[in-house]
Image (cartoon, rainbow, N blue to C red; front, side, top):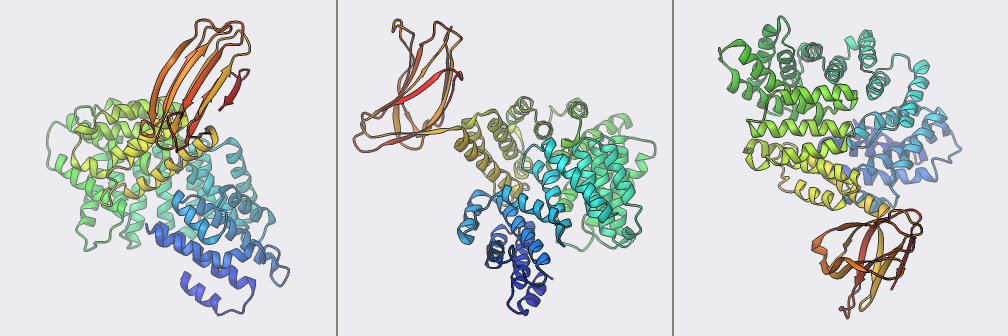
Length: 585
């Protein structure tokens, strides 16, 4: 359809509206290819879209002919979407897109254009508003960024703006429910779903109605309401089945079965058997192009049958085993795929972690690793950095004990990536870089989380780079020279200095010396040592007891032994705000 639209636009006369249409066609085609997991082809289409979109900055935004309001609205939407989408690509692809198009890709500029498009009230205003809200209530959580109160307030304002003009809009309803969930108002989110599903239009839009039930199930999961989630999952599966659609049916049925098992309510046994039987039926169908969620549900179904099929042991013991297995699978989905633990209150999050811990997975390294990973991800969603790091460490101690299925899933690399994100937030750049290196090991195409890890690793690499650029400074030491950074205290308070630095390449001599006021009792804090680029970050700290002021700490970088090559130091210092810093060469 996109290429048909582009073909029709190409037949139009040469005017700015034609360029706008063709540019948007290629831009959306690029998005579709990225969603189809063809990122290179997607970037190529996005870059090609610039052939037409680039005129928007000059021709379209200032166009004053027939249909100028439509042209300007389309231009703001196209330019904003182009900037926003390209800003989410890996660094290498952002550079490629910027080089190809000559357009400086910036996320903030893209978001500003979308907001301007909405505020001007043109024909594309609602689409721009949907894009702006969707980024802040969904995409930001996926890339591991915190949603601010101001951003959520702006989302609420946009939904209120849309209410009278686009009453009963299903797309705004979905985002309104997500906004309530982000504000940890889960009953209101579920209420929006219930209200929307009464609309008669959903009787015709079967796939969309099934998706509404799926979203409702996720909100119930975030509220730890497993029985209600099971009912919603089953409703979604039944709609797909009635519509003759097979895709996502197995996934919905397997999740419903697992939630029925966890809830253990009266009648659950029949419900579980019914849903497991549905998955069995799907597996027997003559269909080979199942999507990733359905393939995962088939793997879980096979595991379930291997563990519990035909098992007539003690009901209480068997139920506990089934509940433990089901909770682990649901928890992994909640944290890795659905990311709904971000919607939990701190109390619900602690309850969630306690439920997993009390299931006793420690006897099985594979299950224990996934359990710890799920809790670590939950801590990242709750922005609990210290608890998250502790969980990652605990899980990674088991990495040598797990089997091939766990390795092929990608859980170990995911934990290293997650630890790296935590370390960036803690300012531990060396540990973040080490974690990134481990996260990138063995991420081959046969790893289940291959695409997830590729994106997450590119995001971590970008965060490390940004942190270094924003928080670190550069110091160039020419061949045969010595650079000395001095920090001098200005009062009698405790004198604390921390350093963190690394070399871009080669090696340099480094030492730290403390000189109290008056010059007596000088001492080396770090003796002269040759450091190399392979040493990665060199970190340390020093604390004096305080005095009359005038104490000096010297950090010396000596390149005196080098006759030809200068060395570049990337460094960060932490010292009292009233201390004085000086650099001499």
